[in-house]
Length: 358
Image (cartoon, rainbow, N blue to C red):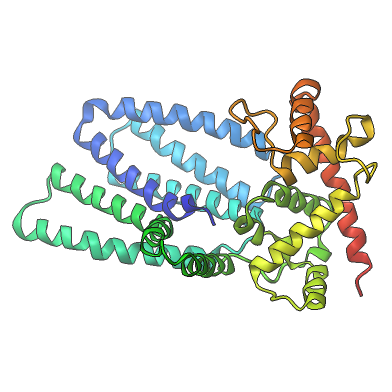
């Protein structure tokens, strides 16, 4: 689960409270604030309708309903006067929008969301209560709740959430210096933490064998996108393929999440190699090479042909030739068309492999 998922919900709630505090205490500017917010929301809603037009479901319907509630609260403030009831409606709409967007994004990746979400939210609120609670207690005893002290409380809440959300990165950086003379210990601790975080989001009840063609293509495409990131690849539903269980059993390897991801990488690489027109050559530019080139060099090797900042100095001669060929002879739109077609071919090969398993 991405780090923004841990902080998005509380962060937007805090931001919403802060903005409403400003507009209620500085009445002169509240219409300007809501006018700008309303304009942004209408543009966002237009793009959301366009993207979801061909994929309506209960989640999207509820999301648009909450969008209209949130927009309606801003319109009401523009034509009327601020009221606590409008503030509550606005907050409910915002809470629901962020929550549904968060859950939809995670479910689309084929991951479990509730255990990690529950753990993260509980842990975040606990740490926030411990840290910010002391600040509130001191202000309550020795001062009063004015604009400056409320701003301090909100800042304390934001800092505690950000520290909790980035704690893994802080811990990794700290251990890098502490165990600088013990690289094996450092690597093992990183592996243990990575495995724990992945296990919380991996949905072991996924059955890739039962996916339809579009689902299999979707997760195959995502797997290639995460080919160079073992942690993100580990949460892909394709790691639950029965062929992976079979291969790990035959090689007597562990069946933990990282080993399953490594085996998935090998399977994808084997499928890509089967697209290669001539096995005795490493690179070609004829029409029959287009699907192999569009997957192997950008995703397996990791070249970035359309990035202006990518130099590719450390590449092999074949990879450098491929990089130059993409940049001079293959339009970006054509490249993505080849990639999508090649990925569907790989998904079909995966389906053929699955059909041969008892």
